[in-house]
Length: 335
DNA sequence: GGCCCTCTTTAGGGCCTT
Image (cartoon, rainbow, N blue to C red):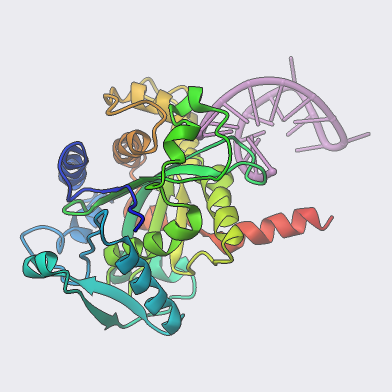
């Protein structure tokens, strides 16, 4: 039996460090929101988190993967695929069930929002958004010729299993280990999943973080022109569509807005490293590794949205769907 | 590759992602 190395924040250090930091994201945001006064748009953020603090149980968002239950996860994902677009599944796992491997799959009602605009028009729907910071490492810049070799996610709600991280076997040589420290040897180990094996697990993980009837907002730096096209290409290679209820948001335009706004306290550059240094955010983990950049971006986003007074609905306003990127590409290539 | 800016738009260079 093959086992797969993936990291969830339920596990011990270093993942627990990310777990703790993830929990502080909202707390810090609340402090910033309070300093913004009653009229601050950040009050949206405070209200959005009302059901995420105070010990409320979210039975619909618990997923656990260990090195020994990969096949079970894949089997669950295939079961979900049978239902297709009609229903959405989430796993309900109690502490007892964790020990007995007994997992109950329950149907969750699905709402079709149509467009992200409808979400921003309804503040109640904004509360249903799941914000996922993500980053990928690749073998190069070309989505056509290069492959993803690492992915990391962080659900900004925090708590158990709020982070997801794994290397990915690209089934090719990794020429740029000097950039991220990920070598061909590291990704060629038998316990490192290939993309076709990872995609159903990734979808299952996202569904486990998703609120019933809610949408997921993936947030990445330069996501529109780099991370998302890479994801689309990798999904396409595996004959899988990016789920329609996945929205994406690029923080690079936010950074540009911030630089453009001027002022003595504005950053001068828009790279993630420059923003991290500008906000004096310490580097956690290895530079240019996916989880390290995810952690940096989660804090950079907090600071940028505060400086620009952008609420969660503002992030959704700036979101796009994977299908929109494909349409743009088709139009340009057809000329 | 896409976006942004400007000494631009009939263009070109810089930035951002690995």
